[in-house]
Length: 155
Image (cartoon, rainbow, N blue to C red; front, side, top):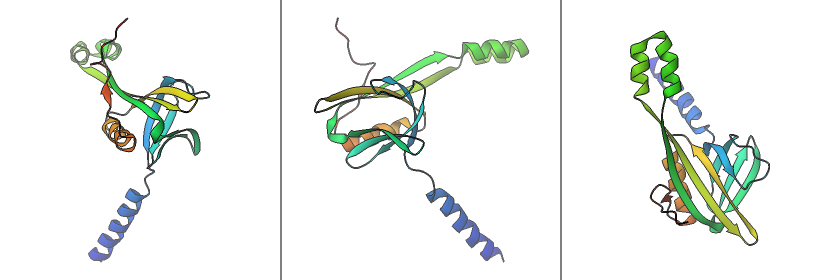
């Protein structure tokens, strides 16, 4: 009986693991893409020759991998002041400790030029997914991601 339960659990767990949708969940932060609002939840799918952004089951943007001209990466780090103030109302000690913590947001930018179609966008990735997104984009495009904080801006 124990062997039967173990076999059934192995089959169920492996089926659930394989049924996971491909792609990474991202949030659109802005760019030249028409019809997508800032903050919209998207999925990015990196195929062998293209990069697809989907919203639900519908493709909202398809970029040929050969058209990508630049991949950038950046972070936004800030203190959790609002949460600290809220907790300080309940417990001053916990609120004080919360004020010392930081929050990071990870952003990936893409620019492309496909004939007369040119554009760019910025997406916010989950802290567990941004490395995978960058690696996939670098692999399919052949371009190396640049850190936006190390770039110098000349006016």
